[in-house]
Length: 180
Image (cartoon, rainbow, N blue to C red; front, top):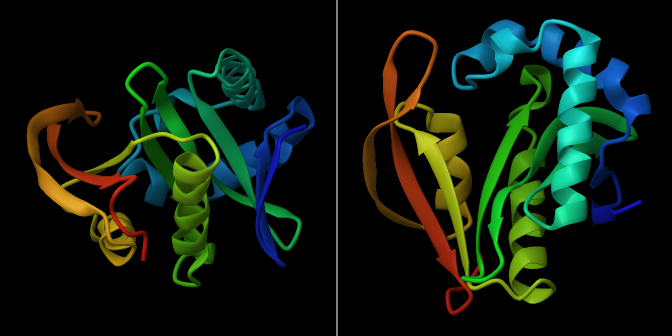
């Protein structure tokens, strides 16, 4: 099983089917706040939907096309983060993340994204990391900004979010940049 340590109270690991219940309960508990920015919430209505996500994540990990990991804080699943897409040929990947609302504001996601970026650049030897965040999602935007990612621009109407399109801000970090 793949495990990425972050610090003494936080680590990431590949999700297993035994995690489905805990992960689904987390999604269900924070459904309303997560729904504001995540387009898949309405399709995750049963534990079985979470099992499907876990299986999809395991397949992506095995094929080295994605790496979605559960975030464990003090041994409790509090969210998901990882590499949504991995382009091995061009050495480019994208980071995505979400965290249960009651765990926000404690620096958890800053530490997680810093560890993911460090792992991507220094262990997997990727050259470019992208993070795309909906305009208006200020909490998520603060993370790449704090870590030294460069704001490259805005992709107009790039994601359908239930009943409307949202623009995405594109942030990037290159291997030649400094992770703060």
